[in-house]
Image (cartoon, rainbow, N blue to C red):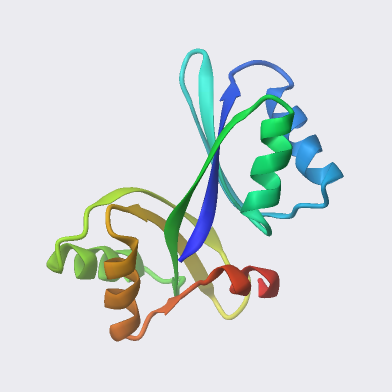
Length: 142
């Protein structure tokens, strides 16, 4: 499992640039991110090199942040690979709340980041079936 940082960010010009600048000044690398917006606010979800340091820096700057566990699984960058992961989780009763993916760029692999109700069961299930599940220490090697 890895830690994901969620940041509630005002939906206005410059807000995303401000948050990115805070992380840059703290030398925090963003490995993956997604931004979902509403009329007034958005939720910026990120996998970063150090979720605690990023959360602290953004909180000091006035942002509301939350860290939680997510599962990032390595899979082939081929048609049907996502289905294989999701179908396996469905078989054991794991509900996927949301997901986002990023390409690894090496050996035609991709990662899918899963927010699930039971990260431990998800990690165990995927690992038993031969999938590689990222841990926090693995982020430095991406």
